[in-house]
Image (tube, rainbow, N blue to C red; front, side, top):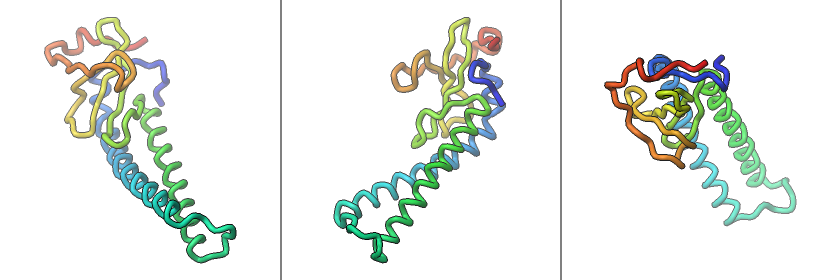
Length: 149
């Protein structure tokens, strides 16, 4: 397990990517499914509000769907926890974006990987989405990118 304070190098993040890709693939797929089902249930509830009694077959089916959706949301959280355990933070389950805390030239940064990328290609200094993603200069290599303490 990687502690939250551990700062990774680009090479360390890239070494984790085979496992990260597998987890993120599951996350993106499950997130899309959950989003679709959540929207469908919302639409059903708007068109057919819940009856005062849970005795109807229709209401039992909807309650079962809601229960399954809640279970899958828990499963999605467990996937995000797996990423945390190996040093990554899920920042966008729809796009499959994961940040890894790192150090770049003495500055704390987040190396940002997206599911379609073959390796870590970018970084940002602030929260994902609030700061601009900057492409890594491949000429930097491991000499400028130091390991965390």
